[in-house]
Length: 220
Ligand code: G3P
Image (cartoon, protein in one colour):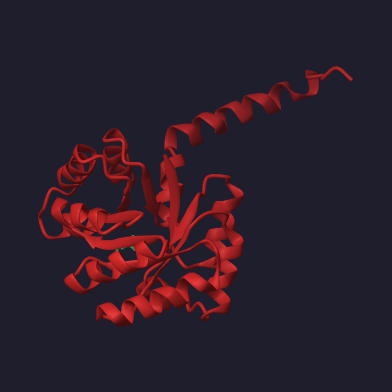
């Protein structure tokens, strides 16, 4: 099981890397705009900050443009992964880039057949957008389950990423399905650790520790 951080915020990335839990980073144009990350300097800083894949999305809509941009992205740093949307043009670009040996993260996947075709085209990863499915009244977790099942049925090597994760329950339900990778906003990552009973339990322990501190002697 791997955890990617879904952000372009360098401070969040360095804090999460310090936790020792982060296996990669995913970005999208919205996250880059929000973080005000410079290009390519800021992106390269992200690539240096994390040991593992960093997904950067193409901005062209036609296959030839995506391929050209994808090749440029891949040449910037050895750990960059090209994020390509699953449209007809995108599938064509995924096929070409994957045949070139460039790792692709097929993005904006909302149903199992999109995952299957992205895998057939050679994508290394496919990102299923849970939160956005729930937003429009679909059962995101059952769709994710079908995506996992269909790739497994055909022995596809493509790894699914649970993306658009909005809260810890998404992570729990996706983890129970054995989803190989989660990409998490920083706030959700923190939410996986924090529990009010841990906090209150610790406060009580520390309070009691202070009352016996004077009599505690560690051997030298
Ligand atoms: O990983 C994809 C993610 O960045 C999209 O999240 O919350 O904008 O649907 P959201």
